[in-house]
Image 1 (tube, rainbow, N blue to C red):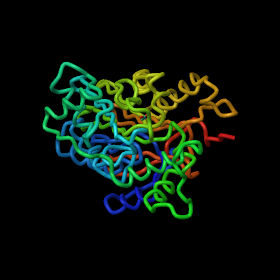
Image 2 (image 1 turned 120 degrees about the horizontal axis):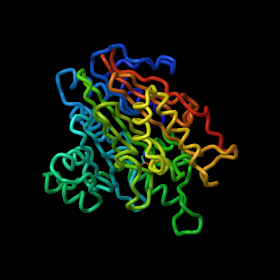
Image 3 (image 1 turned 30 degrees about the horizontal axis):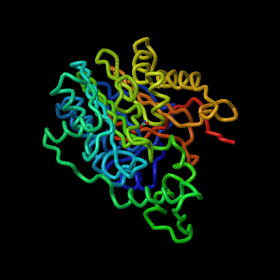
Amino acid sequence: MTISRRNLLGTAAAVAVAVKTARAQKPASAANGPLAISSANGIKAVAKAVDLMSRGADPLDAAIAGVNLVEDDPNDMTVGYGGVPNEEGIVQLDASCMHGPTARAGAVASLEGCKNPSKIAKLVMETTDHVLLVGPGARHFATMNGYPVENLLTEKARKVWLYWKQNLSDKDKWLEPDPDHLDPDVRAFIDEFGWDEFRKPQRGGTIHLSAVTPRGDIAGCTTTSGLFFKMPGRVGDSPIIGAGCFTDNDVGSAGSTGRGEANILVSGGHLAVEMMRQGKHPKDACIEVLKRIAATTRERRLLTKAGRPNFGITFYAVSKNREYGSASMYGLGDTGKPRRFAVADAAGARLEECAHLFERLELK
Ligand code: GLY
């Protein structure tokens, strides 16, 4: 997950961003206040969640209100409205949530026409006997709950998708656009995500947010538009309880962004929480999950020449006593800058550096 200039500029007006080093990932000594941690695209989301919890909100209500800001933002092309569509040009969204105090969870996958899959995931949790609804069933459930079908494909996302199609092959009937006369929206997308990068199948984005209240009640939520140009019906880790999101009110909460397939194979969210149960600091719990992913990534197509995973994935975790941390497979993002996560507590909302398993992804 990279922090774009747009994200940073958009954020600066709302919250004071203080970048700290990984060494600063100490227990938040704003000891008894609420705390929220998320991927870096969630700095406004963690601020919102903490604000709500400081006024008595339930941690899941706070988490969902936080991520809704990102789902509603057409400029975040990795989540909700404006998300990059699948290979057919259709935006399909995944989300899950888990409520520590009641030990319940809900999720939706491949949901179309609804900006806020996190809200539908919570409705699955609260109003059904199920945990996960998918595809047309999830859509029908959203409609029954008063969420009309909305167009989620923004003009920018549509142009980017068309550009991807035009560039897919030099053996089809599409002609590649003149690189010197690219549409400004396509140019802006390439500047943010990189052309070579976003053509890789693992490229995408997500927001995970975990929250803990002053009473030590915990919740988590993860929401995403998934991999860019994914196969229709492809589901990543975000709506999989125990992978993209897991919360245990006695221990803590964890979630992830990045290559979902790798996370599903190790049940990373659950594993991080189990590591914390064994006494590991949240940052170290995240590192343990990354080690497990590195050890179980064995297919050559997924490995660098050095035998390391050739994809990015990041975990975020918070414990019941408000220790928090995040770790990424690679410490440096695509732009060469350190990867960061967002955290908010009584000291305000800020970005801090993720710990990492490896420093830099070297594909060659
Ligand atoms: N982690 C998001 C996804 O793989 O869809």
